[in-house]
Length: 163
Image 1 (tube, rainbow, N blue to C red):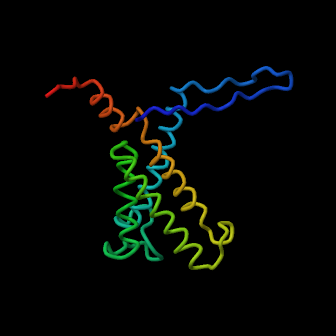
Image 2: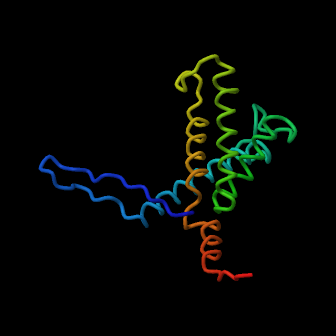
Image 3: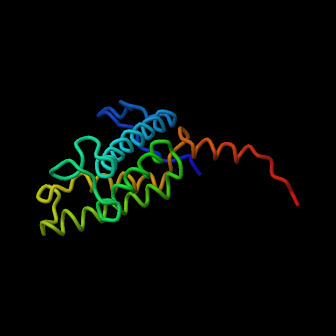
């Protein structure tokens, strides 16, 4: 189920006339695709930083994280899930895993390490946002502009054969 039937109200002026009509679904899907791809590439960069030493590397010396450490596991999730989310492959389950990873990062690394609940104190804005963006895509899926969408269209066109 890749279509989304979300109805948002028109913005109404003070005379009761619509100032901005509801976005047509094609544009809404294009905007969600842009969010998926941009957030996915940003997520990949964090995994590549931890595992491959790219973009300045990991830690104060710019190295890489040990794959069997908590940062290595996080980097693997960020790199693999991020690439798949960008392409729209297995988006729902991988976005759910990525959302969980970011929730753990927020509660364990940001709140837990500082004992500060609020993101403006514990510097946890990014994991908090990633957790909810990936939760959104785990619920809605990648949309029609993805490999998941292409596969869904192919499955829908395939004739059903009765036994």
